[in-house]
Amino acid sequence: MSSLSNTTALVTGASRGIGRGIALALGDAGATVYVTGRSVGADRTDDLPGTVDETAGSVTERGGRGIAVQCDHTDDRQVEALFERMDRDHDHDHGSGGGLGLLVNNVWGGYEGYGESFDGPFWEQPIETWDRMFDAGVRAHFTASRLAVPRLLDADGGLVVTVSSGHGGRFRGSVPYDVSKTATERLTKTMAHELRDTPVSAVAVQPGFTRTERVLDAVDEDEEVLAGTESPLYTGRAVVALVLDDGVADRSGGVFRVGDLARAYGFTDVDGTRPAPFDLPGDPL
Image (cartoon, rainbow, N blue to C red; front, side, top):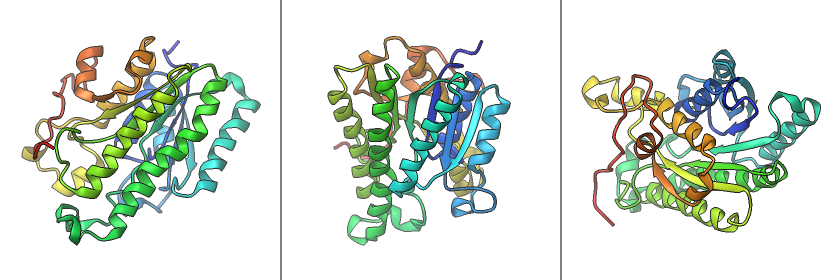
């Protein structure tokens, strides 16, 4: 029996990229995985490869059970409908994986349409950049978390993992980006504080430079640029390790680099390497 065969997970923003890698790693461990995102069929975000249906199908092929749900996580009604769908599925067939045990907050719309302005000074940034990073990032994480936690409590415990980025000790290269990722990590810490006397834990993870579809498109698969990068499954394996850790409550409220978790738990990337923890270049703050 697979190690997470009795676990039901929700991974938001899993059409592609790190979310897809997390969903696939959970599938490798036998979990039931709800895969959400906006991309279905030919209607794909920024015309990048990957859809919720493709990811869910791959989860099933790898030994788990993938369930695709199209959902725009900036639309509260769609998010509420998603959780209601999961409730109905559980009531109808609770033997397929049990109640919700894991929420992975990964959805992120902050890169959409930013162009070269991303690296410009904040006074030259369009306000839409800030809005996307907070609405389709921090707010989306909060919305999913506030709906997930009562269900995790009803299931006698669980875990909320929120995907962040960069290194909190250094400037992340853009004011809206830095502030939104800092807020994501603060959200994790404060949720963990309020959950401290419950069986639900909350942690944040910081992937390194990851070979997502967007990154590969941006660098034109330049081997020199991609040297030392990690696959999306590396973060996925970190999430699986956290779920399997009986002592994860001791980590609640923490922000962990994936490379550090790999060394702590002993997992590797898909090629057998163990990429080092990500040290973001830039000015310390």
